[in-house]
Length: 288
Image (cartoon, rainbow, N blue to C red; front, side):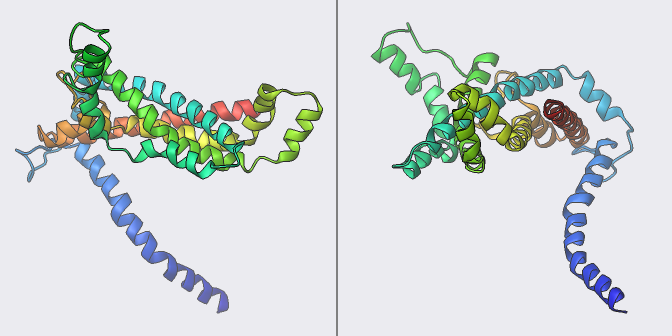
């Protein structure tokens, strides 16, 4: 009787959480998957005729999809290692600072809370950067259209993405570095290891779990980039600087092709799942 009462109590405590999870997580996923199999748009909002895999075929046959897919891959491939390397470097430097350490941490974290709107005015055709290069330094003969071509617009977004992400990486790596036993550094120093060997043989193995966590989080964040592209380039010219999420938003809320957008979301989720598996196996093989 006591065991049954405990089970009933556990079930009673779990039920509200499971109900909320099912209502706000499981049901939306199932509903979204059903939408991806239907011809759902502004014109067929009520009927929602079944279309099978037609939306998925449309996604893969769409040239713009491959453009934005490559953009997302490039953005992730550039910003993820950039943020991790610079964030870890600053964390290592700050871990050795005793005075004014909090001040330096706040200064390095400020870009995280800086608005993207500011950067659009800096890199605009008639923005601050062009004024400085042309009017002040005289190194250009006119205004450069930084945001009006595909790769220059993406380059600006990637540079700013790295800059804004350094602070978050610094905080995570700084916390991880504090958990590495100092005895290991002392033993390495006795063995004659320099700073670089200490980093390779003590620091990196000690924060390997954190590196994997940050790698997966940043990869997901890279594929989910939205605000910077929307605010800085707006997908121009002709969606050439769009990423998967901004293209999905455009197809859903500008063209009303909800079925296409739903199918694209599952393609994106599958891609992220495969990348996560590859990252896990790569880290596991290194441990072995």
